[in-house]
Image 1 (cartoon, helix red, strand yellow):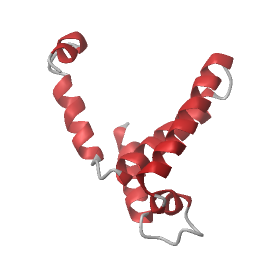
Image 2 (cartoon, helix red, strand yellow):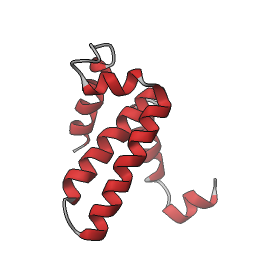
Image 3 (cartoon, one colour):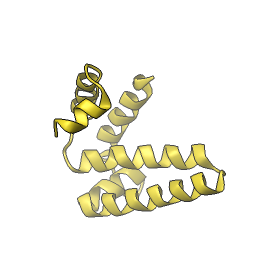
Image 4 (tube, one colour):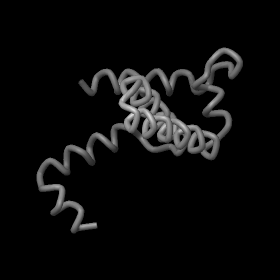
Length: 101
């Protein structure tokens, strides 16, 4: 399942240096972290609305995940590091993990 996300991350990275007029991803990344965060917030708000209305949830969830990955790329956070963190968390309960922060 994570192969789809890994492929999406690869595509985001490849489009980082593309022409902003021809790539939505490139246009987001060229706007910097603030632009990406603002767009992520907008998409999350749309997901919240969809969940409350019980409509268009899958579409809005996909948009939110995509914009999260773009924002992470803008912040120079590697998706691979997030996967490692999630793997490490499997070794203890969520409550235990939260208490160690």
